[in-house]
Length: 108
Image 1: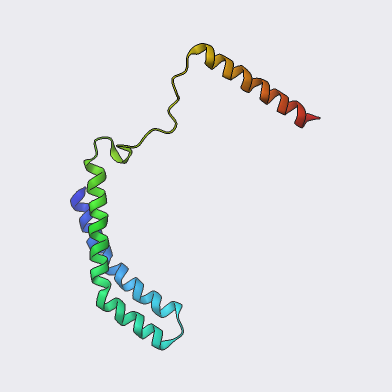
Image 2: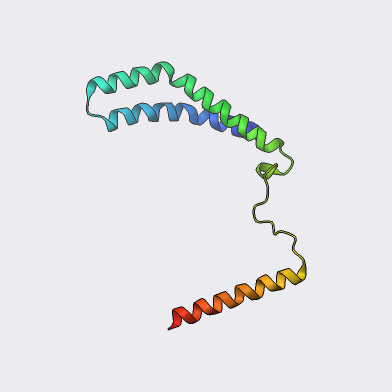
């Protein structure tokens, strides 16, 4: 899978390189701007694409090396606090009463 991902990125990078040049010609009408942007991309585009591929592979390996995937080290924000049963019933009843009052107010 890792080798396939690397091969896929290497196959797609020349297509992305050409697509950027194609977009320069399609989105601008100024010949000077098209020439400048194209020559700039031809000069530094391969370096930028290589850096993007390396960053992509770095993040992929970083996630694959995590024991629990990309959730490793994150705090579970949806985890419920430990509350004693009596307090939990009281909170439930207060919430229920508030909802009933809101419903009756909206219903009028």
